[in-house]
Length: 574
Image (cartoon, rainbow, N blue to C red):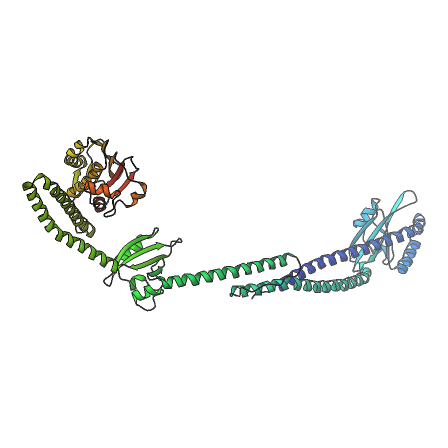
């Protein structure tokens, strides 16, 4: 059962007051008891001193009978028992009993102390009188250095009425103090607990979403400082919640309006969130809480989700004869993932139409161009020098068109993935020497130098000989075309896991703004120069696809009139 703070405070005050009251009462009782005993002792000592003047002459005269009569009369008048004891402990006179019947008193502590010349005091139970007694013993000297002890005693119960009155008044006063203290404690507990209870009720309302809750401020103590901090916290929470709500509404609107399907899944593959586009794609009613693979049956999607554990991943999947570009991004916590499905069916259809168009047109153009080239060559053999100039132009442009068509067909096959490669281990140096031999006449005609730099030992590349030769031919052809002086250097080297081919020239270079697009189809840096040199604008696109086909990478570095270097990396043969 929950105990309110006022109860805890009141109980604390109560325990404190009771403990302190008990300690004070015990101290007061002890002080009064001690004072009463001290007062009684002083009274007995003064009485003994007064009696000593009368008792000494009687002792000197050995008048024991008169001594007994005297102390009995005084004892009767004062209610004090008086006993005279000689130095051997024998009772000589007693105010209440016959001395002859009394035992030796030498062993009594107060008597022993008095015999040593010091007043003695003792409290104990008297077997003779059957009372708790206070004993005072005083040393006496008389006659020829004779000594005796006068012992005076009185029942302690004579002090009890006084102590009882003291106890009664003390308890009455203590009760008044305790009751007053408890009332004050109750008041203070209420004063302290009231703002704390208000804070507690306000906290509950705040926890239930009532962000406008505030606590009234009174005074300037620690509790009010806490209340002030609570109000500031409530105000900040209200602002933060309003911002979060606004952001949530905006996010929900954005997600709902997305054409792409969006799905959020947890670490176990359960669907946490899904927008309308994704629901329309799956068309399965309520999806929250179900595993995504129950609704989307795609092994490729399962593979992408598993691989995208720490980094974003993109891939293409097929669902119901449609193609979707699937992007999976893990959230920072690593427990959830965002899956976005973008319908690219129409885009892929248009790409297929474009590829078919390119291939079909290329095939259709090849036949008439071949015929034109053939007739042009025939006419070149029969015509005069004047006509030969025009026929050479026709032949040159026909050759360029045929090169473009051949490259288009080749590139379309590479992009479509229809090209089968026959992999084998190839000696990289032999491959490059064969390509340089093809270009030896052009290199010599331009007075260029070409050489191979190779690390020690044979360097092998695993791949298709025809495609790799095509790659080297395109890169060397570009180097020869765009280099007017200097030369071409081909470097072969090995790293831990790759074979590196670097083809460098000292040609005109490529401006920085063009480097990112040189592997695009038909993209040329200098169109007029390219047409003049017979370039198709497809060579580097073919190179890129061949490198990708062999699971390699290609990069380029260049600066205007500072030469160009293409770096190709292939995995080393296993």
